[in-house]
Length: 379
Image (cartoon, rainbow, N blue to C red; front, side, top):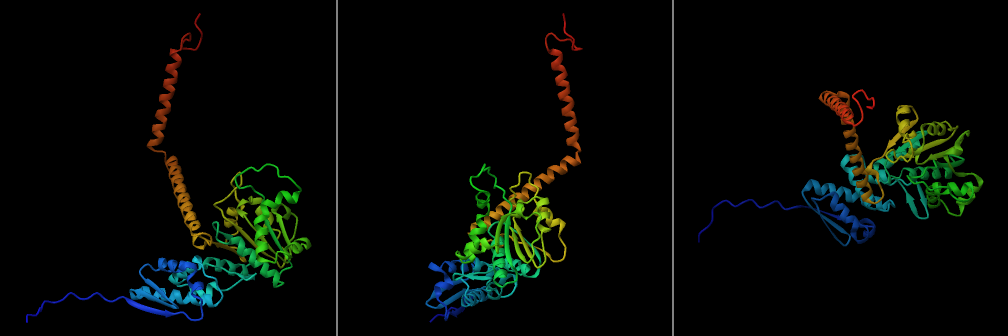
């Protein structure tokens, strides 16, 4: 019987397989409704096939990728056991923390600031965690970043926490009354009725973090104060947790006035997005203060990015797109300014064009009927 002694091509290596048994955790909390978080896990590790059967998760692929995915799953299981409600943001942030080697996501993201009506308020990204830690460690903190990064929400949660722990006697929330690019005209009602629309986001966050029946009592007693920035002049704010929201819409003079209200035993958090300035003149006090106060002890600037956006994942991509557009616009403006400064051949060309225009105007005057070359009328 003939035999084939030709060498055979080597068989491809079998994919590496890792199985994880999930005990004591409801799979819907780990994978989300309709396994949505499973899809997020697969996006973070595209080279790994993920299969779920009952309480067992099977990972297949190249060994390094499978081990990284397994570490992420184990961290997510720890977070669920610690009481964290997982969402896409938590999965993406956990994967980013592991890639950066910044520690354990379960340790970084599981520390709750507040628990209100069964809902825990906690930092969801590494940038948010650094921001919250800075509030604990410094007297004045500037939270600067794009929309949706939780700057104001986390600052207010820290304020409520400080009040509950009796670290401060009152909370003061303020923001400038500046329209977002629209002229609303004169608003009806009393002064309070007029400024309430500008302060509504702060009221909404308060009602979410505290008992809604308690909030009016605290407001009436002055323990919690929500006021426009103009009301801060001439005051000294002692033993208070003060949050200035939408600080990009303060003028340099307003920012200086606000910061000098700081009294003994107080903490200040200033939040804003320097890319969304609604001031008519465009001179933002927040933009200036980053240069004036940088490097001063006990003042910290926390800069959040699109990686820290916790709204719809499209918001982060929108922020990146606008950032890229602004960078290209600034580059084009800089190049035009450089060309104007350098002059060179363009300056000579512009000079020649000016001479030609003057010559054409002189020739046109000479051709006008009833006028002499000296401009005197013929009789």
